[in-house]
Length: 298
Length: 192
Image 1 (cartoon, one colour):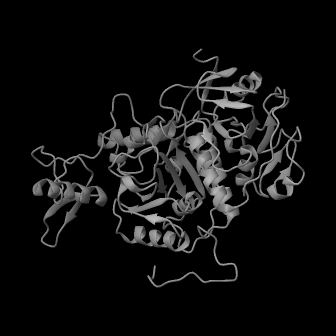
Image 2 (cartoon, chains in turn yellow, green; image 1 turned 180 degrees about the vertical axis):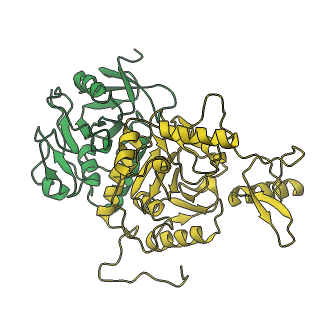
Image 3 (cartoon, one colour; image 1 turned 60 degrees about the vertical axis):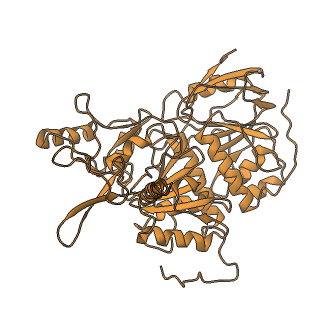
């Protein structure tokens, strides 16, 4: 978005949060049903937003329906506060929600909109996490008809999805899904938890914070309520495992900036072809670096 | 006994107030059994209706608890209780109808029932004690209610027995409210 862009001022201008109150009310009613039926993809009338579908309009509509003047917002894209998607969405909220504070620090935010990551720092009951979702239905890989998928979801019939996972095991000796790992909520609905890495899936389980997922193009809202059982879909004899960040010698790779050995790492390849690793969560990484430099000074 | 409503009206039609109230309601649904105090100086069940309803939704008020002047502001379509998305009721009377429970494919069609009760307590000091567990509840929670007919909870437990079908209850007294989504397991009696 152009930094000098201003919303066109017509007679009435725009209401707080860009969306009109009817749109917000509809989203709010859907959110309540989504929480009451954990993992159910509640249909809603996704509005046209002044950005293309696929740029996080689902998450943005959730954020704009939730946000009030006393909120502090953090927007991240793949763990980073500074990437294009995050910067643009943050600017848009600042433009349309006067009075809202923005932050890069996870612990200061009351509302966090995220694309494809859950912050490293444990969220609290005072926070709400909004995830942007490109493909909301975990069953779409095995059943093209939405009408039939809705019946399968209602009956909690995920046998065909399990067959898909089994085929993976037969062919590759492990389940090859790297992100969007199908996750079962409260023993019933299986969700697509948005393209978060496997690393983040266990953090949905018994999370103190509410997690809302919004798919703008697919017009669906669903939720992982706080303190809810969220289990990745696996077999009894094949355990779920997260990304492995050990090198060839079995040593855990550390972040090149802060040295953390407990965070999710991005792999970077420089022009010379050297491979280095860095925390994906930029806010976490900066905080680790601050802690280290404070310790050195002390 | 009737649970009478007082008609204090803060500015429950103002978008900023409605947003504030919605966030309290969101907390109530996220953490069932936590009694939320209504952030507005108004009858909570009317304020909640004001924050949630518009012309797209349906409302039923079988006991005529709402003043006629409120209806046009709510904009909601008036339909029989069996079909309504939202039903406003006096909790002291036993249930006399079966609300919409949704369908297997579209469970969001299940109704939200707003029950006006006399008082809500976050301990076991009132007449009807309930022990709650389920999503949103880390450890067993006990709440108790005055002015709620026990048949509501018995009927509700029946209505939510085949998940994902079910109803949501929102209990409101003069100042507070608490939400009981269909996933909450309610045991009557609780820790006495």
